[in-house]
Length: 249
Image (tube, rainbow, N blue to C red; front, side, top):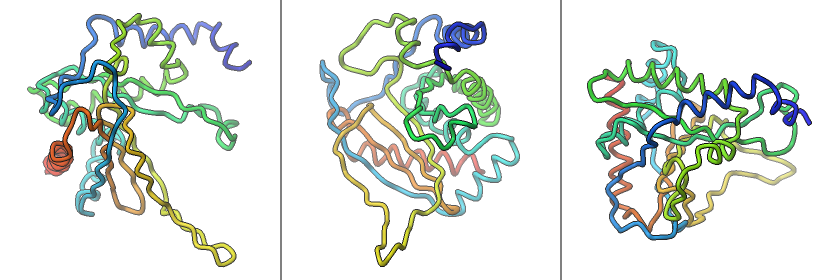
């Protein structure tokens, strides 16, 4: 009822205008170099590569956040855009990112899934310094958070995109950051700890997930095995780490 009431307000129309303005004109398609021809129907066969960085990189990124007023998410997302720009030569890139959707304090402890997807469009133009680009990413992210109640599915319908059965609508890559404490419980003689499950699926061409826990960063690249070889994704991960080290310098 709360959400339905929101749909009738001027505030909601303003959020809709924001997203429609953000995606007016030609929508860019991420032009990665693939190892295999793209199947006519989107494949969800996938694999995952996990990797980490040294603690000094984590400390350097934290210092950069403090100096620029950007969040960890914004810095890592900006670096991911730079990586994609280097691989594609494109200066107009859309990356999807999940957001928890709990915009009201009453929802914080409520059981259920409220997640929405934010399509974040940025312009990693080669002539800019990283700090200039980071400022743009920061502004775009803040504006997207401000308008996060507008549902991604609604946007796809309004944009009236030509459906391509070989790929996702609007973007082909996702980025997410999870901040979490190390999970360990000791209860009545039972020890519990996380167990990684290799699902061998990929929801997107590439999805970069970053986890921050106890002053450490770990990364996971989920990728479509019908498009990429494992060696290619390993290089992609190494190049991302190189970019992080360079922006710290």
